Image 1 (cartoon, helix red, strand yellow):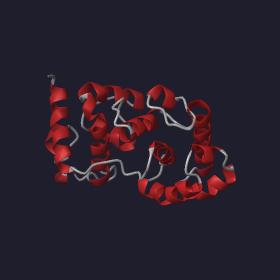
Image 2 (cartoon, rainbow, N blue to C red):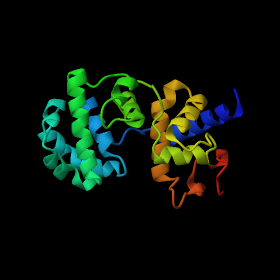
Image 3 (cartoon, rainbow, N blue to C red):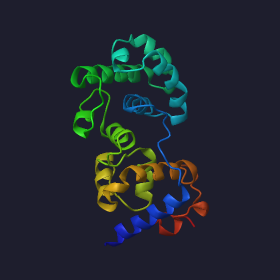
Image 4 (cartoon, rainbow, N blue to C red):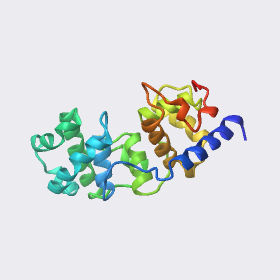
Length: 211
């Protein structure tokens, strides 16, 4: 076992103990809802998305309903998530693609998911890991990108390359939970503006620690 893999295992175990309840903080009832919520979560908070989605899914409970929605109506519902025109267009496009290509059923492969409008690799990984329990890759959001760099697990800049580095360090069965742990730690302790290194359970393993 190389040093980076060993340190990765130690970091994972410590964060797992620190956040035993770590999970996806988007509220969803099925894979369709999770995919839509994840698309809406770009450049906003999960809290904000969770305020919007109950009304959205009451009106458009499935792909067929959302596929036939008027964009202006969807824009009004998702307005507070920011970039609401693009997001409305993306989730309607996703629903239409899901309906035409998969009969409204969310597919279980990254290739099929990522081919749908509005869905990139990050969203596909979120859906596969959290709706289906499939560890196909590692979600890379802003928290994970920052913490992966600070912890010395990658020197890459793009999400795709960061993901590949993380997949080399951590075993497949950890990939979905790893993302939750890094996101929770980024939100609660390793803040981008004021990281609380003195309260960090992995500071002694972090090359960037200020302690």
